[in-house]
Image: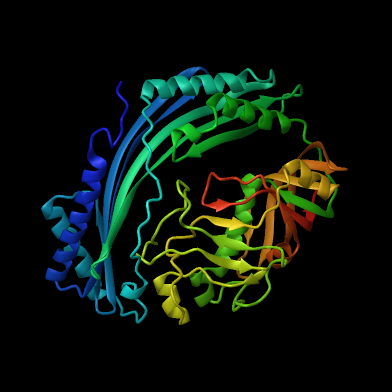
Length: 453
């Protein structure tokens, strides 16, 4: 079967141009129907995924999706509608629906498009689109080999929850009635493997590994993914209890981003104007130790969070959220900025490549610095209050003594207040996880409460 690529069909440039034309067309329709302003998002995504389990390809799934989201403003009233049909009649009906909704909503003095002075005017090439010329048959063979490498890595690996190999390509365009239209194509490829191990007592554990990238040649070798999944799974067997105590904690790099997500939630414009953040009115105040900087860099080529503009069309920029431990900026959309009487920060829709100060320490180096404590590799449940900062999660991982992992731990919970957790970061390792838009190494905290036996 032939590999599927947008560029092969010659449609990347054509689709991007077509989307821009459709955006312009919809904006004109909105004006004709009486809208004082409008914005449109149009996206197309296509690709396929192949799943293999226990040596056989179980599923091949193709997708080609498109959507158009329309928001119109009638003064300070707004209405939104969406469709997957881009025929003339469907577009006209969708605009009509959005306008109808807008006529019956309450006025909101903070609604409306971003002011034109904040819109992006520079669109650097961020190198986000790279085809992967792989066929579904080749992807299936890769998935089977990945699983075989994991199953063969240790005799205690007894089952598989499957291997997925996927490739996706997308192109989108955003425009508004200020005359702004921007868009770009992207790709995302990946391999993931989930395995099950069983010990001599019949107890089972599950773990996984994965790799993903904009560029297929940057993916970790698929057999290595299987072997790492096996290693992580087997390491969880024969977990032991630990006593309730206070001890140093390391958040392993793949879950360290969850800690930074809590920070972002607390400094988001929505949390600030709703007065529902433990970091309310903290601009200019110390939040982290003075050796910590947290920055945003939207212009990293091929990164998952890269963009020259946010979902309001506002220009993204390199900036500090935290500088020398001090909060320098909130994370603001156009709407939340107006509510707070501030300028938008280019973060409507989220953060773009968040980076935290790190050392060159490996995870092994961090374990030695910690000495005795708990290495957390998995979190369960959702026990975080952004309002108070109270933090509590079920956790599993490994108990460490004298800088050396002693045994796996499961069935405990960890708790503290985020304010204290942020202030007590000892250091961040150099084992940066680049598989998402929040880039962090493993994080060593001075102390948390561990609820065990």
